[in-house]
Length: 175
Ligand code: FEO
Image (cartoon, helix red, strand yellow):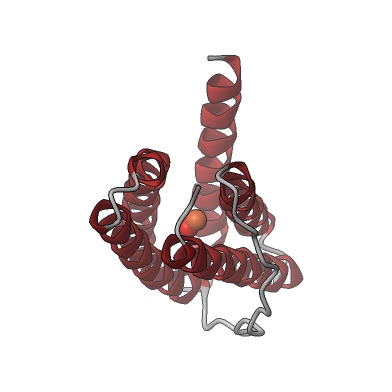
């Protein structure tokens, strides 16, 4: 049975993951409206992943005898200067998510909640992968440059990142 403190903290994380889902959804629709199909697909997929993260926590709380609560979500930003701006914000957002996951791990250990500690290990790996992904994308965008003609190549870069993520997910599903 989960402690009330751990249950409340995991419920806060549901709101964090749902917020990430909305943030990436907003980035996706912004990119879509700019005609940046590769970028839009990349962020749509990322939004879907955040929804999966949220659902993992929802089901975990239920499994350990707690009650997952549906949170109110703040409206995300709607406008981005350019793709680099969106990626920088996504990276900063992921760093915040990582910090909240680390706090959860600390709490799980303080509470001797080995089950939650083990459950959260997946999220630590996931956060590392996401931070690395956005760092790489930001580096490539900086190499390409942000002028008008660069946009085509930046969008291709995001399309490539999207295809790689889809392939990785398919491989994970087969494993
Ligand atoms: Fe689920 Fe990217 O944080």
